[in-house]
Image 1 (cartoon, rainbow, N blue to C red):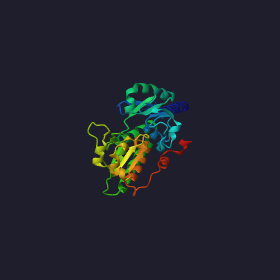
Image 2 (cartoon, rainbow, N blue to C red):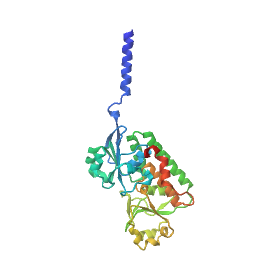
Image 3 (tube, helix red, strand yellow):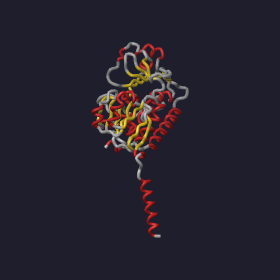
Image 4 (cartoon, one colour):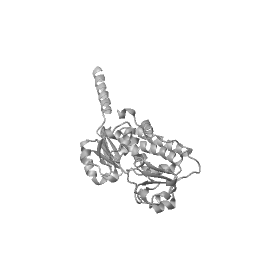
Length: 320
């Protein structure tokens, strides 16, 4: 009887051990990226690299500091990421990532912007598990945050980040002055400014707060934006203009039409930070929402301290 009991205990113990040990399949997480490719990533990757700030944004919000990232503008460490990018290996401008520098970082997973990397997908895949996302539309943001949080081993936190933002956006929209729909435009600097359709992430947020985008919705099968002449801008006359601030070159200001615009006359042109360019991460979209509310309705919403808001979402120990 004792031998039988010992044998039974041994079988039970072995079964418990087998259950406790993850199988090979459970050692990896599988997600489908915006190429439509199912990518397997090792569970709880330790070394995260990012081509664009999306991966950095999500990782920091989850309490993980990436080892490498591209930059938007050389020498500029974004306030909305608390300047923590200075501690990460710089692997080039986001549109021209340096594969050699990326390989030196030895990443477990690479979270990349699709349009800048898909042409070299095979090379990226040799360096680490490679995930490519569009990072263009607010409708895509929620899935991107969910996917990346899952890959980084924190799916519940990812779901919470999405739920929190949706709630905050609804609350801010409810507080916006009723019946007020300021005409707005979001653009890159240029002789003929490239401007963004309403589906674009930042524009979607401004529109959700009651703004009326002069560029309008995207045509079917269209891009996320289009060139808009100063003549057209004068015709549509935006009341608030957001300009992506990528440096000292502002050729649009040299056009005599520029000073005829209502937004210019009323000093409602805002040169905005990198969070307005790469808005799909949880930190960026939260700050853009708060900034947009103030810029649209300065008497109803307070001025935003970008670093203070970012510090509420990024664990303090990541700065040590």
